[in-house]
Length: 71
Image (tube, rainbow, N blue to C red; front, side, top):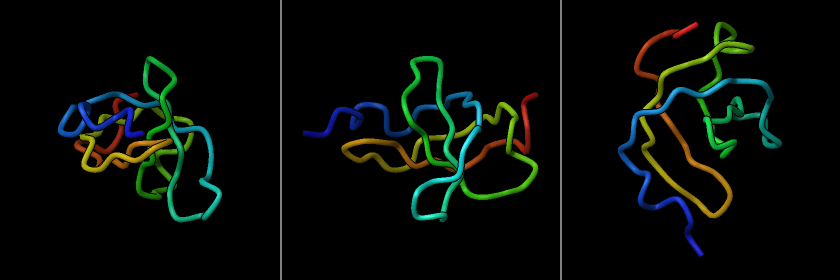
């Protein structure tokens, strides 16, 4: 079951709100409230960040930031 494989390579804006359970990423959500993991950077918390999806899993997508912060 891989519900996000078709989203690999997409550019999305995500709102970063939490720390992941393994404390390796921040957790953000896109407009569909899908979980997107974002590399940790204190400037991202509470902000909308533009990212590119680079990896997908069963429960989330892993991204790399394209810009520092959108808003």
